[in-house]
Image 1 (cartoon, one colour):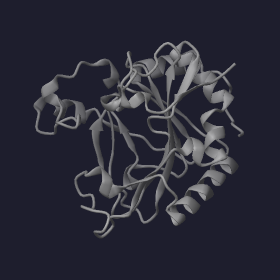
Image 2: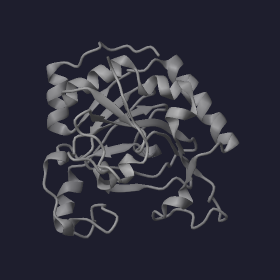
Image 3: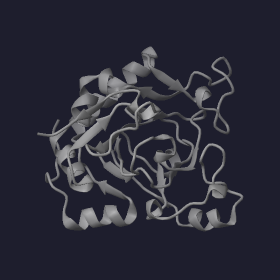
Length: 259
């Protein structure tokens, strides 16, 4: 796995992550490595190689209502990327990536296999939008101090359902009434409208990587292009912040990385 940035983050990059809750690292992963992951993803999609999550499984607005309805077997993600193929696993454990995460978390880093650990696939026509939410909403750790790492395998923008962030939203207090039953920000609440207005769409090219905080509000629209958009996503926590025993977050192992 080859990369093209320096091993360490600069002080400015660390400060930007702490302030905004996300950090974009352009062209961090070489084109050849991305191409291997793209070919693997497309082969596994064609084979419907399990484990998969389908759009019909999530029940979001606009999703097919069942696996047997039109578009019901549209894949939303290829699960367990870590064990699915060596190309994903090499990226998840890349020493340069781990060194950067150690800088941001301030300690040894663990890869959680309970969350993300997938290839996100957003298809035209049936790939649904995702509302404003925080990853920590369904994760169980003592501290809200995890980092999600998103690798773009295709160019991403608003047209094909790219990521949107509310900068700095990992540092604000949200009241229970601002959230719906699934812990998405409610569009009918006045306080949320001000947050939505701060939302920022990010444009990514193949090989770009985004780090974002587990408490950062983010969203993504529908894919209005005619091509499937693919991204590899893993999540990491510090050694002193293990998953809470008995929770969903402890259902799969956490892998200690680095030396």
